[in-house]
Amino acid sequence: MRARSVVRGGLSFTLVSSLCWLLAGTASAAEEEEAAPSPEPSEPEAPPRKPVRPAEAEPAPEPPPPVKPTSSVSLGEFAGWKVGLEGRVNTFFSYGWGNQSPVTTPEGPPFVEGSGVPLNDNQTDVNGNFHTPRIRNGFVANLFALNVSRNLTDTTTMLAHFALWADIETNLSVYIQPQTYMQESYLRLEGPWGQLTAGRQLALFSRGEVEIDFLYAHGNGLGWPCNFNFIYATCGQIGFGVMFPFFRPGFMYQTPSLGGLTFAAGAYDPVILAGKWERVIMPTLQAELAFTTKFGSTGMFKVFANGLIQKLGAKRDFMNIANKTVTQWGGAAGMRFELGPLRMGLAGHYGRGLGFYYAQENSAAAAYNATDLMNPDDARRDGDLRLFRGFYGQLAGVFGPVMLAAGAGVSQLVPLSWETGVALPPLPKQNLGINGVFNYRIADNLVFDIDYFQAQFTWYATVFKQTVHTVNTGLTMTF
Image (cartoon, rainbow, N blue to C red; front, top):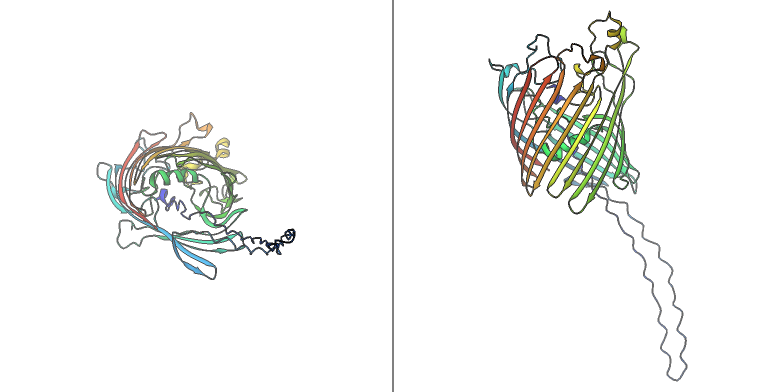
């Protein structure tokens, strides 16, 4: 549940299209020339008259560019407003099996929260294993989006976007209603000067990693279920080398494309790290630089890099660190390459206080928790943020209606420098995920999927390892 609260879908991985403007041309007046009269045969030839140039016509006023189409289904145009909708519906059968993560390690101490599949006891048999079938949504939940747009000026358009996400699963209880929530709601102004988006939107940090996962693996699949006992949509590759940007309230500006180069910067509502770091000092600041180019008839190359920073203060209840602040920061980079049927993506991230599943994850593993406040060094280090890193690679081949894909990713927690060589608690150490995907496009808007995901979780200070397998199959319709 923790992990996919994380994801509540995924990715509209943002499903609003971006198409080219249509420009209207202007008409020019044609010049006329008056012909000279024919001379009489008996008279000398008269010089031809000088052509008379008519007064130059006023050019017709150039109409404003049309509002960009933003939806696959147009509902009509009213008083200059265009209304459209888009969305998706999917259903998957998911079967998972593996060994259950216990509350305490075989060595005795309890696991530090932040990884594995916990809170699954009612699915566990007497041997400590589970075999659980579910019927649920895929990587992206059911989605219904409404777009309302019009021209603000001759060169600038404005758009209002509202996207409802809905899960079909009901927490293994028929009387519990599925979740429906407004995942996205923003206004967007766009013109030759760039694009300004204000409202709840997909954030910038690590969105390139999720783009690779969506396009070359789980956009029409399921991947890692995140949980076997709760609700919410699933995770795809998230948590295994991929960090979810999350949908966050904020302001984001993006430049127009300058020969394929774009820069985006955003300020988002700050988030706390519950427990000690709950005093917010600044918004979360994020930025991304990307370059995209096409070559030949089927080639495409994209490279991206993005970053995040936010400062937090301690609550006054913690007198030992009441005047201390910490900075969450991170960097991510990657590339996408397409040529003919080949699709390839590589990405990685690194930063302090990030977490496994999403940027600035509210996880107990993200910060050190002092055990001896009477020790000045321990008291001073209380709340120090740990480092996280991840790496992800995905390969796919598209052959007509068929896509075959395989990939792997790893997310790791790096102990603090002074924790090296000391007795660590059972902290999450590594999430390793391997995927295999088969898609068959039955029609333009209907895809059949079979995918497999293997997850392996390890911890510091214990020999316990959790291995979970999942096989998923289902249908996705988009419109």
